[in-house]
Image 1 (spheres, rainbow, N blue to C red):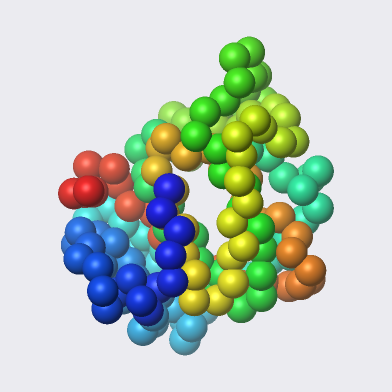
Image 2 (image 1 turned 90 degrees about the horizontal axis):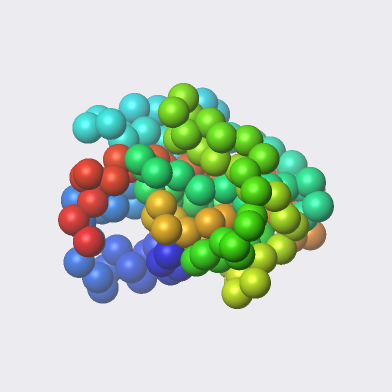
Amino acid sequence: MIYFDIQHFRRSAGTCRPIGKALEFISEKAHGLADGTHDLGNGMFAILKKYEPAAREKRRYESHVRMVDIQVVLDGAEIIYCCRSLPEGTKVTEDRLARDDVCFYEGLSLPGEFPLAMLPGLAAILTPADYHQTECFAGIKTCRKALIKIPVELMEI
């Protein structure tokens, strides 16, 4: 998991091409595009959506195998809870890995988790090793976000 300020990261850090392309899309195009799925090439795509963050009790931890997420709130705020491992015996509540590359888990909170305050201008890169619970309420009722999906095999870091 990498949590960062987009503008600072773009100016000061070398990034692998897919991350650079994703950050360029977020910074230069996302705000002006309609909600929906946008093809970024090479198996990468962006999902732009307006949503209402939910109480944490209504959100589930999830993970992916084939894709890396870049999560960015464009307008509003949310909290993403992250965890690097699941406690032994954690049950899968829904396995959609084969179809949608997502697996959901039981449990509201996990040992060793940490919250990320997602505000406009901040981003989180979540790898298949990062269990995460997204779109949790942070005091603002309506948000808009960009979720960039990057195939793992494109990642150079």
